[in-house]
Structures are given as C-alpha cells and as structure tokens.
Image (cartoon, rainbow, N blue to C red; front, top):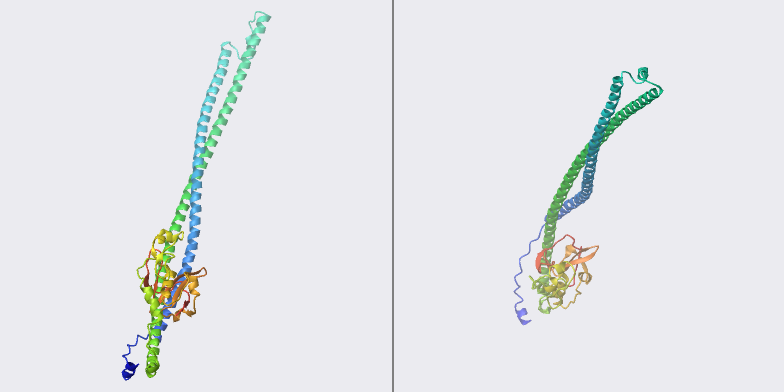
Amino acid sequence: MAMVLGAAGTAPAAPPPPHNPSDAQLDASRAEARAAAARVGDLTSQLAEADAALADTDDRAEAARENANKALVDQYAAEQAAGRAAEAEAAARADADAAGRAIDRARGRVDEFIAGSYRQGSTIGSITAYLGARGPEDLLAREQLLGAVGADALDGMDALRRAQVDKANKDSAARQAAQQARTAAEAAERAARDAAAARDAAVQAQLAARARAAGLAARRAELARRLDDAQARVAGLQAQRRQYQQWVAARRAERAALRRLPALPVPTEGAVRVVIDRALSQLGVPYAWGGGNANGPTLGIHDGGVADSFGDFAKVGFDCSGLMVYAFAGVGIMLPHYSGYQYAAGPHVPLADAEPGDMLFWGGDAGIHHVALYLGDGKMVEAPESGSVVRVTSVRYRGIMPFVTRLL
C-alpha cells in the first residue's frame, strides 16, 4: 500500500484502444450476411425441388428399363412363334406336296380307266361292251366287270377332288399362319425399338437431373461457406465493438480506481483466463468419444458406430463435453460429461453478446450435440469429431444455438 501511495502521482500507461468498427460497417456486414442467408435458403429450396425431380426421373428410368426388358421378352417370344410358324408352313408345304402327288395318282387312275375303256372299243356304259357275249353267263360277267371298273373310276374322281380341296386348305392355312407370325414378330421388334428409345431417353433425363442436383448442391455448399464467412465477419465486427466498449469501460474503471486506489486490493488473474488456458493447454490432444475428465484426457469408450470405426475406444483424449469438464474444473466448477446438461448448467446469454469463457452449443429439435469454448474475436477452442484433435478455429454459425451458457 505504501508503494502504491508513493506512486499515486504516476498512472500506468493505458493500452491503445482497439479498433472500433463504425455503425455503417456493422450494418453492411449484417446486410451481407442476410443476403447470403437468403441465397442459401433459395438454393436450398431449389435443391429440394431438384432432389424431388431426381427421385421422379429415377422412378421413370427404372420403369422404362423394365418396359424395355418386357419388350425384349415379348420380341423373343414372337420370334420363337414366327420360327414355329415357319416350321408349320414348311410342314404344310410338305403335306401340300404329298397332296399334289395324291392328286397325280388319282388323276393317273382316272386316265388309266379312260384309256382302258377306249381299248375295249367303248366308253363306260356303252351297249357295245355287251355285244359278242356268248351266253347269259358271259353277259353277266361283263356287266359285273364294267360295274367294278366304273366304281373304281368314281372313287378315283372323289379322291382327286378331296386331294385338291385338302391341298388348297393346307396351302391357305400355311400362308395365313406364316403371315400372322411375321406380323407379330415385326410388331414385337418395333415395340422393342420403341422401348429401348424410351429407356435411353429416361436414362438421359436421369443423368441430367443428377447433374443439376449435384450442381445445385455444389453451389449451395459454396454459398453456405460464404454465409459462414459473412456471419464470422459480423461476429468479428461485433466482437471488436464489444472490445472497444470494454476498453472504454476499463479506462473509466481505471480512472475511478485510481481515485479510490488506497481502498482497493491488488487484482489476481481472473477465472475466465484460467478456464481458457486450461482448454488451450490441450491443443493437439486426440479426439476420443467419451474421453476427458476434471484431471485431463482419458481413454475413450465404445459407441458401436462411427467412433468405434476411428478406434476412439483405444485413444486417450477428449470429446467436446469432456474438454469443457476439464477446462471449468480449474475454477472449481464440476460440469456433467454431457453437452445437453452443460447447456442448462448456467444462465443463457444471446449469442450476439457472447464473451470469452462462454460455452457455445450446436443442436436442434433432436437436442444439443456439440459444445465449444468461446475465446473472443470470432474464435473458439473445441474437440470437434472422431479422427481430429483439440483445435482453435473460427466459430461455425450453421446450426449454432441462439444462446450461450455463461458460468463465469
């Protein structure tokens, strides 16, 4: 106290004021962030529409493929039927040829009868066939012979007519069956070509829809990155404004303290610094799901999924809430090892008013799923995910909760 009183006439040199962004700069950065958010929202809607269109084209392409398969099956069946019809036509031709030969044989018998009749010097039924008979018995024999020859001739004529009709019927049936088979095969071939063309068109539409969806997704990702940057700039400018305001308040407090100096104790390092330093002391320590306690990094645990695939159960390190447990244990605050309980562990402050030492959270309808420690100036320290390490990074605003938890 004597030393302080002795130096009362000499004030310590005040640090230079931090940058104080203008209201215009703050407004411009907020407008930029709002515009980027609007563009991301618009692209999100377009991407949803593109995804729906892609699902529709996928369905239509699949249906077109199946229709093409059906047409190929139908074409094969028609070709098989055409082949069987061709075989039937060939068989009918063979039958027709056989019928033709039967006609020739029947015609030969008729011709033979007529020739024989003329060799006897008479036609069938002529009275001259009975002349010259030597008696009743001879006359009766000649009559029986002529009757037999006549019946044979009539049978031959009937056989000739039947053979001609049979041949005509078989020729007609063979031609009709062959024509029907050819018509069916041609129709099946046309259907197969049409189905193949429809399939190709559907596949091209599917590829185009996929390309459009991929392009929209890439554009949305780029705009989302720009949105993160814009929001980070807003947060950075707001942090600078707060730092400037804090500097002004600190200068006022210093001047007031100087006036009351004999009554003030010597200040000690604040709890915020202790918590931040403990978290920063673990930079580079591996992420281990379930790892970390008040004393430092610990062995991770099994999750039966992603963490196990990275071997977290065999690593010594921290997960996001475990790092918070360790950091705040330095000032005697014992947090539960669960980000959801940590979110509810203290007062909530709007995100825009976050200060160093506050806890940032990410989540949604399904609950809180990540926590990090705010360092100020748009930066944070976190244990991010399996396969990574404790690190300092810019605050990510996508999915962030609108309030921070302030314990200090």
